[in-house]
Length: 533
Image 1 (cartoon, helix red, strand yellow):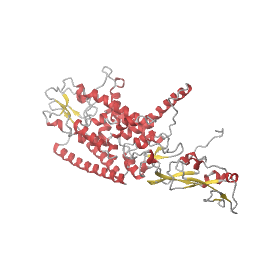
Image 2 (cartoon, one colour):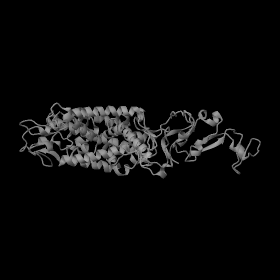
Image 3 (cartoon, rainbow, N blue to C red):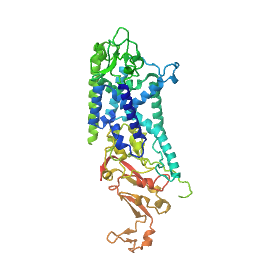
Image 4 (tube, rainbow, N blue to C red):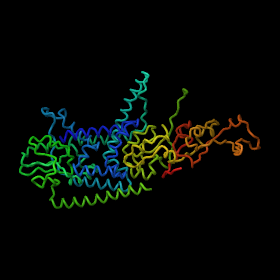
């Protein structure tokens, strides 16, 4: 029963995680958000002790079952491997599936090298490289860039049909936050993953994935393992030929050996064994070889190197956690020209991210916040210091004060949970007026859109003619000679905006609604560190 149960759970987790990235309404987050928070790397970066403990206990009891059930990239690899075994892709058409695998020696040096590089990049704050290796983040980028646009297109077709029927169950959505670079990176990753899994099963999972490596070495000490009853085993080799992790070694005259650092407790070997010789058991088999990692090197040096490796990675993991904790404490028919993005000296980061440094340190660039942003504000950054991490742009919308979706969905602690009330007091940047682009200042046209729509009332419109002033005592306007102006004259005054930077929260509504083209006459400059006002 191990394989059917594992398969049902894997499908449920895979569908749940996928729906989190596809859903743009926010209805899935309260129901399925815990699945994202259970992912191992985001849990470590968020210092989520409960999630980390669940994964570690799961691994110490059942081995690397996390990789074949909870990890969406692991489940996707199993699907690609299943396609590779399907009879349409084989020469031999007699059997439904091919027995195509064989034992391969563990690429220990490669696994250790990738993991050490990954940890060093995390500790050094160079997440731009690390996020490309993180399994959950890689899967998130694939869904956000490749599947969500299709999902939205289908929704828009249904919306058009339902509107024609006077039914508004669906509504139109414009995909605005999936740039070409993200699509290319995701497509390349998908291709690599497909080729490796199609040909050799879980090659990526067991040689490149840093999470798989860490959990693999912990899984050696798991309570339950796939074990062989040598009295029943006839050395037919079916378990080896069906092991997509290539971790089972069958030789005549010697006990069957398992490499538990690569075994993901999928149950495939148990299901194909005609003699019922394989079981998930805590019993020690009649040979000590089954409890050891298969290796072409002598046992003592292997054990020594393994212990040294565990000590090194354990120390590095503690260092990464301490580093994360340190960062935590701190109308008409005329053609309308598209807006161009301003050159911000400091990028804008979402409310709840605390600072650019905190976002950089914790974010895994999974794109979950970007995929869930209902206003099209969040985009993946192309900067190498914040590569593919979210940054804010206001050409297609603004950050609504009542929206906390990105903070609600983030599983890595890069964007802390905040309430709507707290968000209205968080200053992520301040508005900057550009005289050269302003219609009243350059074309003698009345405007005032920025001040009229500012939710923080941080923008005031003052007359261009500085000789005309308002008396604060009576609220009346007077010219340079002290003559009071009537309401018609006051209403005809050309005014320009003045920003109160102490009240501005950087939501970008002024920038988004500014009618100036191609550059807005007012834009938001980001703050390295957010503050409450």
